[in-house]
Image (cartoon, rainbow, N blue to C red; front, side):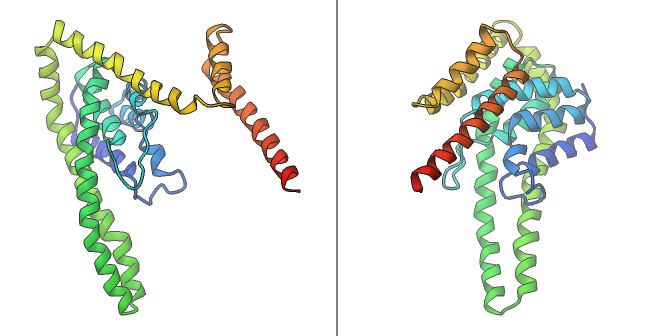
Length: 255
C-alpha cells in the first residue's frame, strides 16, 4: 500500500494532537487522543482502512492499559506507538500481533520527543518571566501560547511524516524478508505483550470492593456470552448506583 504526502502529514497531526500539553482538544483531553485505540482508528480513517486501524490500535492499546505518567515523567509514548505503529502496520499489511511488536519499541523512542519538548520549553518559560517583569501581558500570552506549540508541532509532525512516507517501504521489505520462523516469533511476542497490560490492570484492581466488579464482568462475558457493549452499559449502571450509595453513606456519616 502506498501513502501520499497529505496522508503522511495528517498522521503526524494526529500524533501531535495527542501529546500532553496541546490545548486544541482541551474539552476532550489530550489523553484520549493519546490512546492507541483512538489514534489508531483515526490513522485507519486517514489511510482508508478504518476497521483495520481500529483493530490494530486496540491490539497496541493492550500493553498500555495501565500506562500512567507520574510527575511529568514519560516512560513510554503510547501516542507514538499507536499512531506510527498502526500506520506502518496497515501500509505493510502486518497482523495486529506483529503491529504490537513494532509499536512497543516505537513507543520507547517517543520519550526522546518528550524530553526535547520539555527541555526547550524551559527557554520559553524564561521569556515569559521577562515579559511578566515588564508587565507586558500581551507578550506574555503570546509566548506561553504560540512558541511552545509551534516547536512541538515541528518536532512531532515532521518525524512521523518522514517515518510514514519514507519508512513504510522499509518496513514492508523487512517483513517480507523475515517471513517464516522469525515473523512467527514476532507474532508470538506480540501476542504475549498485551498480557502485561492486562496483568497490571488486574494488580491495580485486586482490592477489596473492586475485584468483585471485575468478576461480575468476567462471568457475564464468559458464561452468559453477553456482548461487550451490553456489559459496558451494565457496568455504567452499576457504577452510578454504587457511587450514589457511597456518597449518601458518606453524607450520613458526616451528619
